[in-house]
Amino acid sequence: MTDTQAPPSTGPGRLAGAVFRLGQLAAVVGVAWFHARLVAPDPYSLLRSARLVWWVVVAATLAAASYGLGLPELPPRRPAVVARSLAAYGLAVGAVSVGQLALAQPLLPRSSLALLGAVVPLWSVLGWNLAGDMASWRSQRDRVFVVSAQPGEPAALSYELTRRAELPAVLVGSLAVGEARLGPDGSTPLLEAARAAAATVVVLDAAAQADDGIVAQVAELHRQGVRVRTLALFYEGWLGKLPVAELARVSLLFDIGEVHRLGYMRAKRVVDLALGLIGLPVLAAAVPLVWLGDRWGNPGPLLFRQRRVGRDGEPFTIWKFRTMVPGPAPDVASPWTVEDDPRVTPFGRLLRRSHLDELPQLVNVLRGELSIVGPRPEQPHYVEELRGKIAFYDVRHLVRPGLTGWAQIKQGYAADEHDALEKLQYDVFYLRRQGLGLDLRILWRTVRGVVGGDGR
Image (tube, rainbow, N blue to C red; front, side):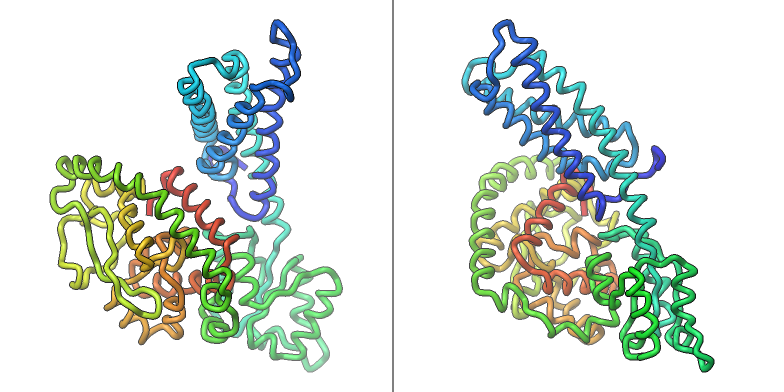
């Protein structure tokens, strides 16, 4: 790995992240012990000291800030790793400083905090290198061979693996269904091609699964340690979505947490209400700041209102801080929003990058029109258009739409019908896996995107 390429933040990145955070904890414990036993004029027991609580605060703040800033996996270059690690360290020290101001007494020795400030960037660079090495190792191990009746499927899959993979892998070969079948002379083209490519994962689409000769060859590969996946299972596990060809097939063949599990539905609503109430003071504090910013670089109304389609297809009015030049009334259709949209004003761009423009949607959350996590709601005229072009598009309306969602963190804006279909694949993945664990994962990734400046 070079200085110019960031290690992927998926698959092995999770293990590297765990090792990184354990190392951070060890650094904090080591520095605290070093002061308690070797530096302090009167050595003391760290476990019995009142300082222990504040060292815990430092460790917890450092871990949370590092995750939010994308450490160790996301920074593109080593200088960015050092800068983000110093920012995380600054937040940790800031937490202790607030405590010192509140209690009007020193809590932790300055020399120890300074030593920690030297250790954290060094360990962050080492962790970043570890994440890159592990990602490289994993991507070499997952060598994928595809058998599909769709001529464009291998190229599409190869492209997906280079940009939004949850588990890094590389496509090493493919065969059409007709090419992979047993030959009249008993030849085994799939078996030989997969061996020659040193494949570790063989992926079969529906047509390939229906051919007994292909299945027999794959069974032999399976006995030799090669993993076998259907196209749908591979997309779910490695890409976090469902393939277009499988949407109609699986759209009704799973339980949806918000529809079929009463306990999850109630817990999700409680979480929505709790986070909505916690966020209200932030919204109240943001209003005068946004109003002042609008006077400088975003003239026009403070709020943007627009009709969107909610749960069960019911329309509602969504609220945001306005980021574009004043546009049509809430009931009037507006064009697709795209990255670097020319309608976005200078201050509006800042609101988008910080995601402050989303804060008024907390009112929609408290009213039950939005959830914190769910598929992003679309305008009614787009929904009508997409219903006629994309099979089972309405399945995304079985649950409350969300302020953030799986498709949002994986793709961002939908700028046309192709992007809408892409987002539907992520939405159906979310519906199949819907649960508090995935919701929390989406929230963490959203926070990381906001802190890391990945404004969408």
